[in-house]
Amino acid sequence: MSETRPQSKSTDITVDFADRFHNLRQRSESLVETLSDADATVQSMEDASPAKWHLAHTTWFFEEFIVAPLRGEQARFDDQFQYLFNSYYDGIGPRHARPMRGMLTRPTLDHVLEYRQHVNAHVLGILKSGNTDIAPLMALGIAHEEQHQELLLTDILHLFAQSPIKPAFSPSKPLQMDPAHDRTGWVAFDGGVTSIGADTQSSDEFAFDCEGPRHDVLLHPYALATHAVTNQQWADFISDGSYQESRLWLSDGFARCQQDEWIAPLYWERRDDEWWNMTLRGFQPVDMNAPVCQVSFFEADAFATWTGHRLPSEFEWENAAREPSTDGNNAGTGRLRPAPQPRATKENPLVGLFGDVWEWTSSAFRPYPGFKPDNGAVGEYNGKFMSGQMVLRGASCVTAANHTRATYRNFFHPDKRWQFSGLRLAKDAS
Image (cartoon, rainbow, N blue to C red; front, side, top):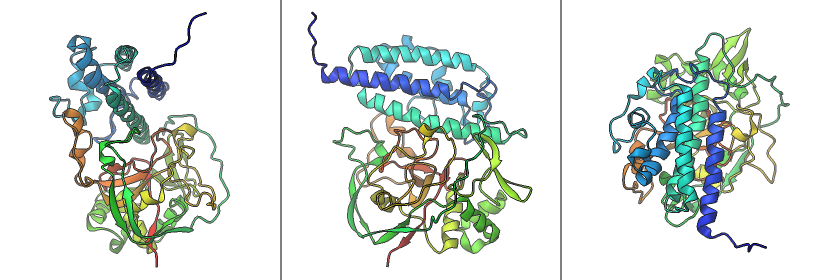
């Protein structure tokens, strides 16, 4: 009889990362199973990237920061890919211009998938060797690819929305309309000093650098809405002429609204006196009981002003969301669109914090006190973008199921609308 020996901690770490890496890479490839090479190549706007590019760039990340440093330049799949699939890392070198990613008819989708298998084999081989020094980079690479899984879905939705035939990414299913119920409750929170952010220095739990350092903030008494704002509430906002009412808007927001002729959330269209919208399951009637999405910060702020309330700060939001949940409507449900949120209960007074839609806050994406970017090119991950962008919190219906936590800071420019972004109202507590 052979002797059974307990696994060492280093073995546990490498086996865990190997399993997570394998599952991650499979899920990314499952997202393109129904796409043609043309679907995966076209770029619908400068903010979006082709599906093929997402698959290649996430592979480039593992090759650039793990494979090449540990196994040498000869381990690269193709020397040209370092230039083609670098996103914004100036420390790595020059790169293909972002607005031109849709011009990359070569490599083909099949060739990109071969690239992924090549890099997968190297990464798994490095993990099998028991190298635990790469654990921080593996954790970052996995979280990075989870971000791109979500971006791949939002970008393919934008692409398909430009087509007059409105193709569905996933098979269309009739909407199951849940009965309407009151979604206008509030949950009050005391003021005081509270700790915000992730303990990025000593915690074993992964967090992006911009989520820390952990620090104290002073909150005044406030209240958050029990639910995210619904499509019906947004339809009322439209009916009241709010897209034409300058007094509701920030100056830059109203200018953008008029310039781009916004009259409703992105993808909404009027058909037979009803609102329809483009979804990942095709063109469908707007589900009036589901949370509104594809709205910009400017629109969210105008809506809050229209109601007489406001958007929460990111600190108020995090203070209210101490216990993250992975059972919300995220990518793991397969719904691929926001769902009507259930009734609030005593046990669950704030509904849908980690699913359906990312929620705009009133906070600018700025560094926390004591923030310092990491050394090297990896330090460019978040710090260089801390200018002119606003923070969103929570998760959406296309966020990876394990990619949620109370400290997570998503961020986009205030005019961006193609993400699954919505809002939850806040108010000062008397």
